Length: 128
Image (cartoon, rainbow, N blue to C red; front, side, top):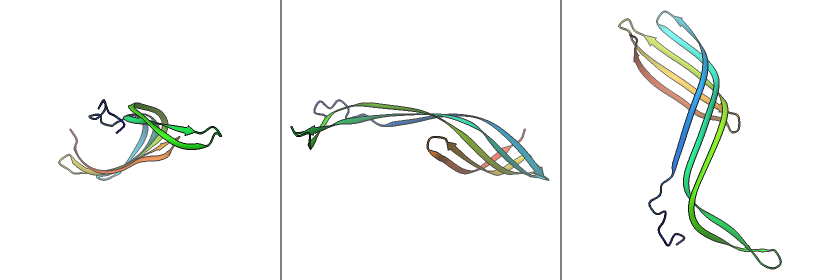
């Protein structure tokens, strides 16, 4: 057991995303069918908090690896900031009673890791 004092037995892992984007979009419509295509720049910050164990290599006098030692647990905080591009494609149908039903598609292209967070979701709305 690496945590004999039980310092971190009730600890839990948290992952927090904060995303902000600035988009430009163009809406096209024909009768009651609306399409919107947009793109913009995205800033994302990711914060991960977890409990981690240190791993230390053990070498003999000839500088050969003979084993590893696990250290006591401790908090590990990782924070990453990324830039990227966001893409949006939306379609909705507007009914005469001002209700609308549609489908929203979105994806993020993070410069450091590639495509992430591809989402397709239906939506229902009302126009005031």
